[in-house]
View 1 (cartoon, rainbow, N blue to C red):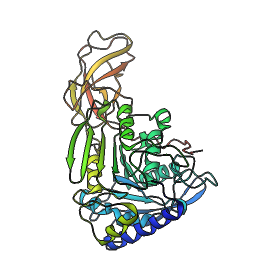
View 2: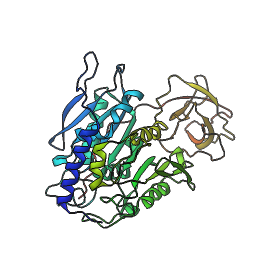
View 3: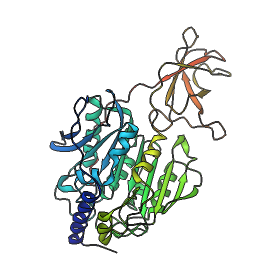
View 4: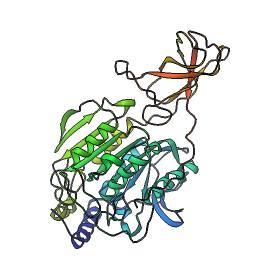
Length: 417
């Protein structure tokens, strides 16, 4: 089913009414907090761009996990904020939320048209804007650079997938709602690392049908094909199926480098499920299809993100590292055992003959990939350590220490042109 632009405008109006009816207004500021909620303005690509910041209530000062949430087409970021109610989860769990604002309420989302139905009148780099929001929050000490997540709804979901394919290294995990990826991503989606991602679609969605369709900007694959694409990218074993209220779920949990993919097939429309629904949701259902209750989309997404929310480990943890044969140069295999899934770097302890062992273990983010042995425990890693010593000692002990913060964002273009 295809809706023309007037219907999309009606959809945005109805969705806005639904959000206003469903959620009470919240204060923008709270005295005594180190960082205040509210509107922020930055410069990105030579343009003034805006986003809304929400800081969890009663949060202690210091960097925190951050979720960047991208609104749908013709949906104000403030309406997305109220409609989704992600802030309530943020307050419970202690993470920051940023809601960037698309220009004219639209995103240049990686297709050859804006939001799949409007011509691109001038190039704007919305992918760069999202990365600039993240960089701003990191520079101000609000966001932990090792604990960033990206999610999006509809048009914002398309941009989320676009960024996941090109800038996966900047986020620990991703989530999309009511989005299916362009068929061209089968060839063009080449992320720098595996992409943990949750994909959620409605079986009765009239705006972004879950079975795929042609749009003015790109032909879209189905929702299940979208999930399977990322499962292939992540090197996942076959999925396990389960059910939840009004949902069928496929989970690819056995993936390379500890990644994961989840696909939620919701028996609903172009609306994310909520813990409860009201009159506003029923009104929106006339255009968008039904909104289901009993399954809370933001909580499901954060539960998925939490699997990859690993704070850097303080101090060093000792582990044995056998170096059988210890070649004079080149590489030597050593076992790395981490306390959990935190990325680590292996170096020799003081007093050892070699100070040149160095390796990085990558779970969900960062470093050069070191593949996990599928038969090993979940927190055990087998990697390759390099040495430039003439003779590295066999049976050397190594210290496992946290990786340093990632380097500043690379200046790369995300233009969809």
